[in-house]
Length: 370
Image 1 (cartoon, rainbow, N blue to C red):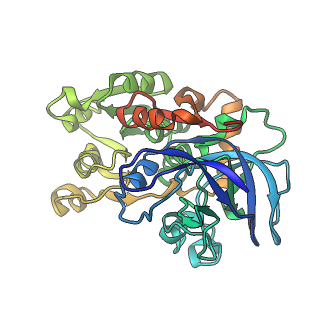
Image 2 (image 1 turned 90 degrees about the vertical axis):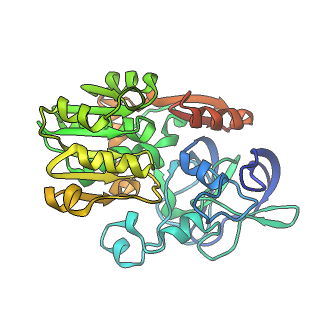
């Protein structure tokens, strides 16, 4: 079938909305009519080929939501008409997967960033040539062929506007899941969150849910820090307006340091600062795509019994965690809608620019009917 999709033809090129050919779903795959898709910094990383894994042309997009239009053979648990979110790919067969840790799938990089479907082929083509996918999803398009492992069914008893669910599949679940599933933050504890974008602010909201007594947001954009305070932060620090962010955090915690830190920035320097904001036995979760980090082993890590952990997708099982977040939202306890700014599909380049500049915390493209 011919559909509209946002294609990037070479590194750092703009998105071009073009007509591409989408092949029907094969075994284990599902055709989804895309309603909306969030824009994430991972999409930009692929456009820039910052991970050295992209093959062009490519259709990015990995925070899609929509309606099941067709199912391939051997698909279980989904039928036409189901409301779904699309999340990350996992094989379902390796040791992490079969032990309930799909976020640690041994084929994570291949399935999500390799540009091809599970069988090694492509479902998208342009002028007879293969087009790469992202997260086996490519949701910057009117329709997506994705694997059933990527899908989360939205429960029928949750009445919600579908575009609102788009960012749950990656950014929101990553931030919230890091605090709830990995850190397991306890009531009365202190946490610092570096980077108050959609991932960081989701971590802030999760910290409030967990009963953290001090929730400190760090960013360089005042508007984001204001939103952090609205969503549950007790203190904020503008790193651009202080000479020593770590000292500011330590002063706020009366010199003890925080129990937990979350870094969402992808900056090695920021990760180091987040780690050293924690006190003895502190745990720092690194969730951004960080390249290189310099840490003084004894002085900054082992000498204080600290832990530095790399976290993917918030240690979430999406089919369990996303409905949980939706229930919390319904009950007024997780207002992630305050992160979202909607854009028409044809304004995708504007939305991407606003995401990079900080003008929008979580841009969501309205794709249905485009």
